Amino acid sequence: MKNGKETIEQADQEMLVRMVMDGFRRIIVHYGAWFAEVEHQVGLDKALAVEDDVWQASLGNQVDRLGKTLGFAVENGVPAVLKTLPRETLADLIEKLSINWLANDGIWFQAVEKRFGMGDAKRCNDTCWTRYSPFEAARIKKLLDLPENGGIPALKKALGMRMYAFINEQSIEEVSDTCIVFYMNNCRVQAARKRKGLADYPCKSAGMVEYPTFAQTIDSRIRTECVGCPPDAHPDGWFCAWKFTLEE
Image (tube, rainbow, N blue to C red; front, top):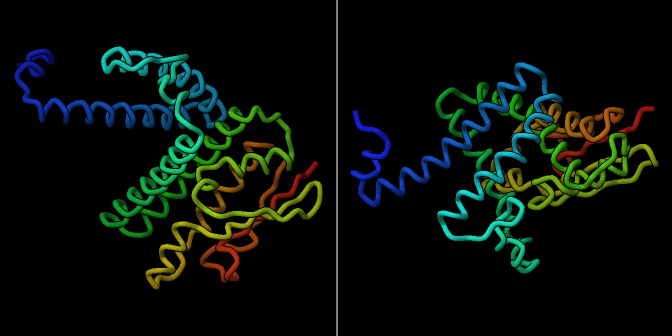
């Protein structure tokens, strides 16, 4: 049996490159597997706290090692080059990351649908949102330093920082100081289906998980009501709409 060092010494250039890329893949999947299992064992709130600790410790270690090998400077766990990029490049990078996130989501859905059918794909998708949506809300809450009970003002800020916000068109109607209606005016996924002459994707079941868990992570007092979401009929001005109300 070969040990790892012997395997590397005998591998050609192409295989070494493939091994590098597969190493990144294994790290990503292992990280997600840990988060999913910790959430299963101790609950989502505790898992979010643990993940925050893990990320702070793990990212710095990983980036420092990569920087030493690849020859790029690292400052506080971040590649220094990122801090030198112009605002336009960073903004474009954020948009591209958001598109990659959405494309990754779609590729997973289609792969499950192809093998097991639409029903299983939707179940997997909806369950995924039970973890991802509160995770995204928690990250935004930390990034913006939002208060624990920030109410509707905090939710409005958070909705503007979602990955969706950088690639879709959305708006907010002010109903009162304690109530807003959020509109997804142009959804990248639904718009693409419309261009192909396809019916709206029935995403309401996912939205009924996604939006309430996001809002309640920002402020547990916020209640969510679906105004309309496919397969519901909707006007041309929006694809889905959600009402958020702060209940004292």
